[in-house]
Amino acid sequence: MIERNFLTPKEVACELVTVAENKVNYSIVQKIILGIIAGAYIAFAAVASNTAAFQLMNNPSTLGISKLISAFVFSGGLILVVVCGSELFTGNNLMLMGVYEKKISVKQLLLSWTTVYISNFVGSILIAFLVTKSGQLDFASSMLGGSTIKIACAKVSLSTHKAIILGILCNWLVCLAVWGSTAARNIGSKIMAIFFPIMMFVTAGFEHSIANMYYISAGIFAKGNSQYMDAAIQLGVKQSDIVSLDWTSFFIGNLIPVTLGNIIGGTVFVATTYWIAFLKKINKRTEIFDMYPLYRTK
Image (cartoon, rainbow, N blue to C red; front, side, top):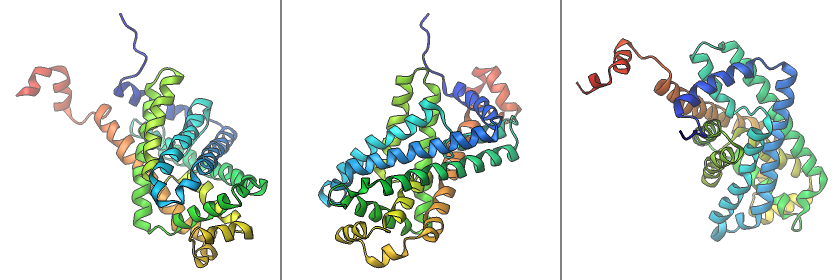
């Protein structure tokens, strides 16, 4: 008999319920530490993907390939989160399945989400601050710093409905990456299961709240450097847009609507959908169908 090296979708659903139980039982210190390093891992991925692709990104004729290169590099962020072990808010949206199965309470879920979200923010901001102060954005005559400001300005200029929709689409794919990695039983398979959904969302230009904690805060820090500001203007960013890039526009213009979209994408389109498909007992008739498969044809 050949041994399976993966879980079936129904087994994944059951496994994620158990995972939710384990996560809510972490101490507050564990949640904070694991949340901070997850934010840092995603920020590292953002730094690397920007550095790899920013020159191509600023040329319309190579924009598509720049997004693909960025996506290849950025995928390493979630790989670090899953393989090395940490707590990422967006992936933890799948914990809702534990509530549906009455294994954890709504209060436990919200406390876990809030703690991890704030910790992710701390980790992301820390890397943004260190990268900006390190001089790493001086790369290519400060054009990397200018590109960092340009990306941040573009993100805070999204309309609310676009930010929500792009957030939904993003975390739909992120949670599918987590779902696939849960199905895999070895490191290589986990990496492949994560890689393609993350590559898809980055290439498509969807919005990830935790990644944006780095992207936008780095842009805010970078605009304090006159050389980076001049480089951003050379890249076509209006000075008025740079001036309006601040913590208020970060939270109101991007982070809040994108976070809302991420929650909808992860909880509705993955957690709820798969719970209904594999775990929910809809009614007695469904149970009869399960017991007597031939009856389904009638």
